[in-house]
Length: 422
Image (cartoon, rainbow, N blue to C red; front, side):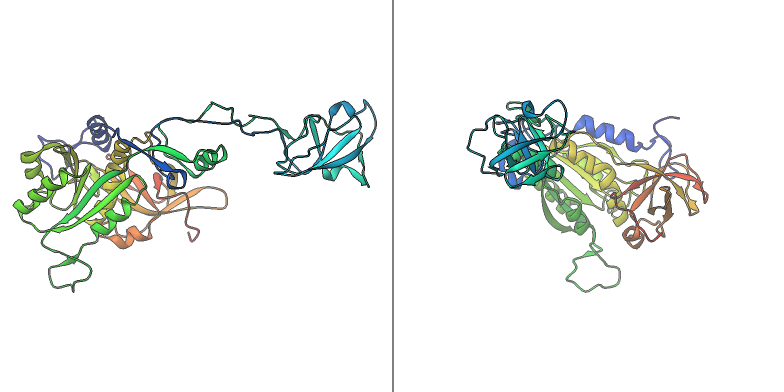
């Protein structure tokens, strides 16, 4: 099957790009930023590492106990039978035993406490009998057990985290455990966004006939809430070609990425593509996706530009499928793609061939571990209520012409938490 496809509303001489083709073009066009900065470890969660991190110490730093019990020398264990040793002190976590063990002696030890150098084994406290200072060890006591060796987890000088990496909670924990207080990370992306359209009003204004509240800027603000992004809301720009051009050119001089919503379609007041062609370059315009066909990608000066559709569900879908991977590439993050699983669809879904469709659904899992999905409601690109109810996309390929109840479908969860109500 060819990579490009015709849309019933597109000129036959201009086949639409598939999502795969659009993402390939973006990957080829975008170069990751090179600038970096150093931040405190407690500010590094979610940031993109700029340099590999090497461990300044061994971890564990000392030989220590893996549990509460008694530390002893394996040489004191006889070949057969139970045996007893004299307990001459305690090794606490943070306060090692300072004495010198002789043959036939042991020490009480707690989890994480340093083992005396004369010992090489720990038996858990539940397995021994205590009679004053005499500790009776059972016949089948294991030796060389329950001991964490120096550098067992991390060797001094070894690479802790390689590139590229978006720092996770586990990474922060690892770095803290070896004493790394600051980390070099890629600088945050500077992203500007605004809505276009005479019909839009802000939330603090009363709604009048012909007007709608501008939800798209709130959507984008939420979608851009990332540790690697500094987002700037530039407000609403009316359908004025010169004003729109002035704002785009001004933003392109100060931001890495400019995102607009509305104005990328084919109406008489849709100026984005025209301005982009005059002031910058158009990489592509319109892709075979539903919702969200009218999507422009290009460049103005050194700033990358994304012109998203005006319908709110289209903004969500195109950002998640197209813009988010582009921002990850620009920020220097390692390539990734959304998790998709196979589920049984328990709704009748309508679809026309021609575009890859992202229908909103509610994903659940039954007691036997089977994944089930149903439609979350009306699928119009203006229907935010069904988007709010959804926890996944039902991803239907371009050639699909509908889904019957019981058919298997590909599902892309919004998160790994599933709805238990279905």
